[in-house]
Length: 256
Ligand SMILES: [Zn+2]
Image 1 (cartoon, rainbow, N blue to C red):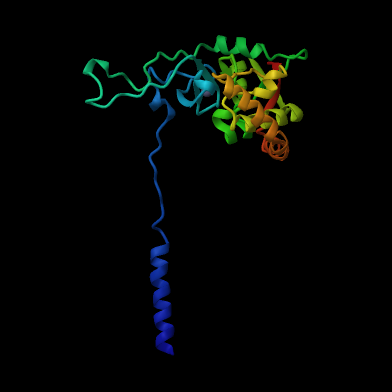
Image 2 (cartoon, rainbow, N blue to C red; image 1 turned 135 degrees about the vertical axis):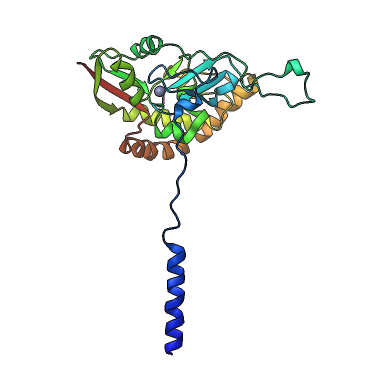
């Protein structure tokens, strides 16, 4: 009996040796600036490098995003072009992974576009790229079906307007519009085109599918999924707002 107690306590000691002091993980810290290159130009809002994020609907372009402030920068008409392997192409035909010249524009360009969403009282309304909707639906997010260049976040707006001595005093959410964005983004996950319903109602930018039969099928899918999508969109948007990641934001600003 005493032996078994001793051996048990011995094994505990052994376990204790393994369990303690061995799990200090020291990962190297790489600053975002290390990713800066001609293909990763600086973010117009905060200056950190932009990285390719996702293809835009109906192959209309490529979306980049800033990992620091979340700003989305859309490059309309561009496509990913992957480097060919040796043997697949002539040596002079090998291109870099992204062969186009990505121009993210200047802070002034971004501010000009922000002004398009200015309300009567001076606040700014925008579809939030840092929303739960965008996180859940990715390339199907309503905000990617647009003719605009910039997709804002509350942080990006704060950084941008700081350049002209303004501060964001409060960011509120638009629940009804937000539920609509969550709903349409959910439908976009199943359709060829983007923003089929809200776009037809003039509430979003419609990106139609490239073939007639796809456009017809998109309407059929939208009608079939309309009610089930509401059942998901309503609680999800309310959760998003509770997390301060609502779909449609309204930032109130003040001059310093
Ligand atoms: Zn940024």
